[in-house]
Image 1: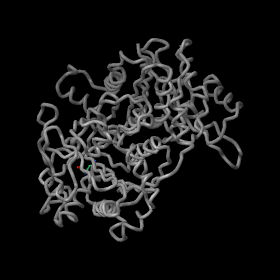
Image 2: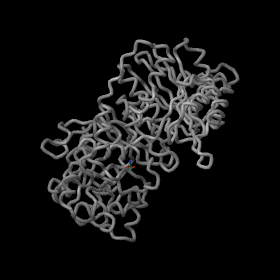
Image 3: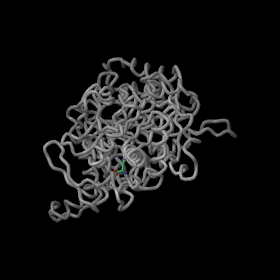
Image 4: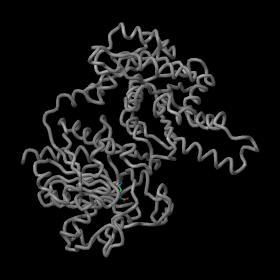
Length: 542
Ligand code: GLN
């Protein structure tokens, strides 16, 4: 029988609820329990797929092709449990389902209302298919008091009654701000936040209090008293050296012990934290440092590339080096020479992206890397731009372009409308809804034996996650291979190029998929581990 942990937030957003949930998941796993993590997002979009990365950070993609909140990335990175379509829901999706049912007449003439219809739909989502796990951690997006989040808070309040005693607990994450003029950490915002929570019927069992300095015992006692929480269940959550220090740091503060105590579990095994300790040691005491330039469009908001920067960190963990990121806005190359920004870096990465702005800059970055023998990693859009660059400058076809940028003479990257997945034919229609036209989720690819990628993966059969509309045109394969750019991975039906590489270059690989989505600190993705290894070798040359 699954137990439920509801995680809410108060005072301000961006306190790291997703990370706290992921870390708690990891701590419970370290004691031998199985976990599942779910996220309830109160916004009205059906999924974050159509939201700008500037608004909401990266769109995380699961194996089953769900475009999900980036917190699901944290969950996977910390627990290794692959997320699915059943792990992220939004108000938009809940209403979409309810309105479809209403139109079909499924409610048999009833008045359709927030309570019980919306709250029931939320509860069904939370409870669905959990017979095989010990703990379900369910995070509610936003902060308590948000108008749009009310049905979610009401639903989890009701679940506290619907479920057996000892089967559901509430963890509330707050902030204790330090006021320099008073020389004190202030507890009042936390008191107000809990008051708000209690006014809608939820009494938190545990308070996780973010703070930039230690919280004195007296303050904890005071918070406990005013918030009706035992003082030991007021946990200080200090800023950590790195996100991978969070599980051990929260364990030392007694977080997982308090969770077990709230459930009255007295026979839990001690946690095995050696794996996390090893990761922390590698992050804290690296043997060296490399600098990787990320040439992208959304460099102003680091959350837009969350999985990517984490995967690079994992590549560093695999090689025992610190990976410094140099964010380069792709359109600077419109007016400045690439060399100014890229000459001293040890690797260049062009990540996924959409639209024409900055594309020429990314093409210049790929050219710089190819010509100067600097390790190059092109991901999705970064692979497409590398192919355009090679067609223009190696093959000599200056008109090479992508149909994403409009009708061109030679779209070496274009819209594919049919391909096979497993035994099924998949189709997409030009001009279809923005949310429904992408190649999304995990697809198989076949690698050519003896190529660099086959060696890196240690296998010729891989499965990686996709999120894109356009594909490199197979028709340019012959020309490119003549000039030393080989298609070392293709889809099983042979229609879609998945990987290009330049065997004569120290490390030049472009992949049509997003390997960063599957990387974990305890299992760095082989391509990132190999790319950082190449960067280490490059650092010895420059
Ligand atoms: N814009 C490109 C496409 O849709 C690449 C997308 C991406 O990088 N994720 O194909």
